[in-house]
Length: 161
Image 1 (cartoon, rainbow, N blue to C red):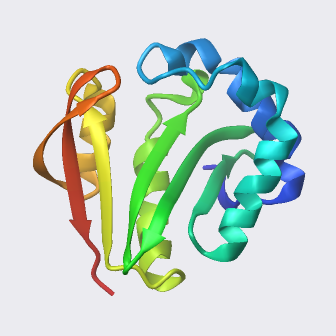
Image 2 (cartoon, helix red, strand yellow; image 1 turned 90 degrees about the horizontal axis):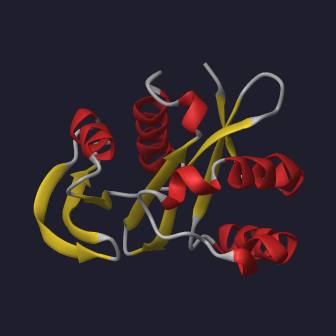
């Protein structure tokens, strides 16, 4: 199993490689980050670390023993005891339970380390894998929403200390 690590400055090269390698795969189900994201990756990485330092976001990477990034599991817009959950797994690492494991681990940290009580998430109706991860990790559907790629569902998880 990979290790879930809080994002650090030295993750930048492996994280960029992960994003570039999986760009087309991710763009098939969520909006592409755009060329600007990759052109200014170092600047964006520093900005993420600043947000994390301020406590408004917590970014995590799933790293294999060789230091390769296999996925991301993030908590963003942290406020009033809650945060929004987002995650993505490398195409070649799907189907191994990494998303479920990573989400569970971030949920544990959300309580134990970050003091959160509620997590929110969203998933496109057509993204059955993501919806399955949310169901397996205890999220419940709270409603419907319109995402950039079409209809989706909103989810919530009330965290237990």
